[in-house]
Amino acid sequence: MNRNGIPIDLASFNRLFTEYNERFVRFALTYVDDYMEAEDIVMEAMTYYWENRARLDNEVHPPTYIFASIKNKCLNHLRDRQYRQALSEQL
Image (cartoon, rainbow, N blue to C red; front, side, top):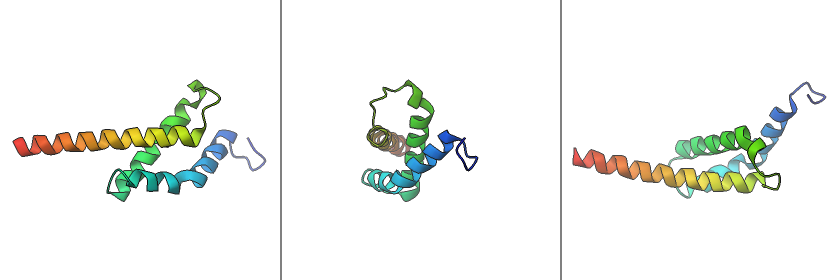
C-alpha cells in the first residue's frame, strides 16, 4: 500500500488509466464509429493487460502493448459486426 492506503497495483492502474485513456479511446475511434464501443474496447484491453502483466516480458511498454491490443480488439469487433450483418441479411 502507498502512503494514502491505496494498494500500489490499484494506484498504478489508475495512473495508467488517467494518463492514457483519452488517447486510447481516440485511437479506438479511428476503427469503430461509436464512442461507447470504443470505450468498452479500451477498458477490455486495459483490463486484459493489467490482469496478465505478470506473464509479459518485463521489457514490454504498457501503452504500446495496450495500443496493439486495442487495434486487434477493434478489428475483431468489426469482423464480428460484419458477420452479424451478413447473417441478418440472409435471414
